[in-house]
Length: 433
Ligand code: SF4
Image (cartoon, rainbow, N blue to C red; front, top):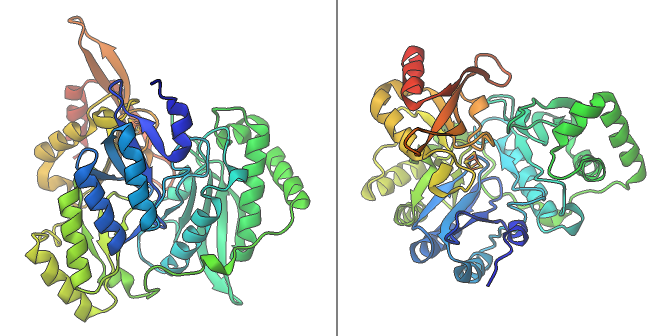
């Protein structure tokens, strides 16, 4: 049977290789996963695929190495606990990423992210887009993730019973990174859905596949883009979220940031057994949700000090004693371990980095992407590594070349070296450390 891999994409499925192994990406609401959902995902991952789940920088979870015949079984299991993958790949509104700093504004952002996810996922009016459309809801400007989205809402304040957001649009990474532009400031949440719809319609009507929204703004200029969106807003009726989307998934406490526990997950690779143990520990302490962070780790949010203490004890019993380690941020995409676009074995490179620099990584932010698509967001890291080319050596073997980025200010990182061999890359990193 010939498999039409392009048709599978809208279901959140990519082919990994010529052997027919498949990746399936599961959308999570604001990166949150209930204990019941985590338990089911862990069970499915033990039975099907590689036995390890991959946490992404956009708060989704990926199965790798699935076979086609296993997909319906896994999907059925996911559906039973309210999880789905529709629109996680292909020309659709992808999973809504949500910042996970847990500071002021997080309570509102996770709710808005949930509303957007439920509204756009599987919505036929917003599928069949020229390419992916990425939306993020950010609790503030720390991390600058708003710069790399097709559309980003950044929480700024509450006023007169409304939550206000700055709206950024037309950003993106890939081979031609472009920082988003500020579209409007202090927009009430009640106006955001209509604005999002208008921008996506403008994208769908004016951009040829497989281009992103950033090309429209790049080619026709910001002024014309604004006119197009304004005209679309005039045409389209106001649309608001239904109450059905209002459930907050985790306690909306301002204390969350001081109570949270972060569990480092190296390269976002989480063995199914470890997820199951973690879910059981959370459950025993009465914590209902696990959070996939924007840096591919897991966070738990107890509601008070006594629950935090219970959780710590439960985690230590299942060998999660590394909670207080100084965290290095090391975002790593799957690279050619599982991704057909990958030019390098990203996790092997990350392991070499960890072995070489050890404690020096503590408190620093690095990211490794296996190709210029930049899924690990290397231009937002202090030091970003992109495998930009694969070169055929004299013996016929192919080896990767790397570009190195350094981010100093608040914008995107700048490329400071290119086409480096692995040895040259480590020499350049030595100089930076
Ligand atoms: S950056 Fe490239 S190699 Fe890495 S996951 Fe994205 S597409 Fe694949």
